Amino acid sequence: MSRKFAILLIVLGLGLALDLMTKIMVLRLMPLGSRIPIADGCLNLVHVHNKGAAFSLLNGLSAGFTRPFFISITGLVLGVVGYLWWRLPPGCWQAALGYSLIMAGAAGNLLDRIRQGEVVDFLDFYWGHYHWPAFNVADSLVCLGAAILVWTILTGEKAGNASNPV
Image (cartoon, rainbow, N blue to C red; front, side, top):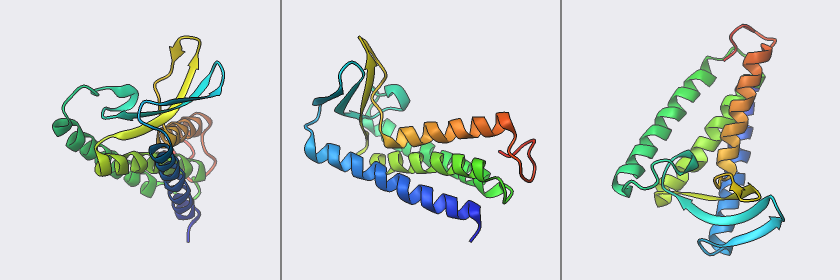
């Protein structure tokens, strides 16, 4: 098994498991709309549902539109990112990790949309009255994967075609 494929399997398995477990815990242990302070002044656990995209964009549109729209878009994103991952030269493990994290996060939120038509969010970071929109593990995986890809592009991964690893 190639290193690239091993990275994909491990990241998908662990990422999906962590995302699913945390969302199940929130669904079972916290009433919708509830809040549990974790770190005073910066972090709450909340239980909210997001029918829209990142930062609740398009949240106000009808479920008849948003559910199939976001399922389709996420499927398309998974296809494109999967293709880019597949095209990576064997030694580009950093880019493989970035793409794998993005696929794991997208798949986690896709499962929510298929199962219940919306995504469960529960991490609420804030400073004073300024709140970052609530998010979840899947969102964190996508952001981490994107950051790794940016880092890989900026530093030029030392393998195969270092000038364009992604």
